[in-house]
Image (cartoon, rainbow, N blue to C red):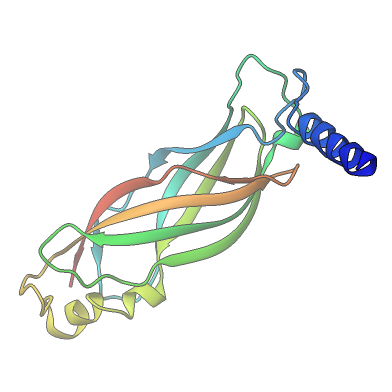
Length: 180
């Protein structure tokens, strides 16, 4: 009986200590990743021609400390690992190209920025899928009957702080028109 009471007391003490946090603990992963300052956005794109890649001329990734008045350090720097582009229709169609996922490398320092130049937002995989195949082959989207496909492109970046915490940017979107 005495042994059982001691065991229960030790477990309660361990649980109580595990629930306590030191007030001076620094959250090494406390950053927000933001995508901003789009420059050179494509507005109208041709589904035909010799080029099968469309890129944004310049984007800026910003890493912001979640606690602006608190301490920061190099473990809060974000190593960018990949980005994705998801496509949704802004017209009456529902066929969309497959999402683009691309591995990349780069570092965004805590409370700093990183400029990304000429990152593709449409590649050959997307141009070789519907509805772009219809624009190339028939000069129109056979689903909607129109010669223009309106798409919304949504970009999101993924990475990790040097301390190992996963970070992703909030999605940023813009619209394009794809013509034959």
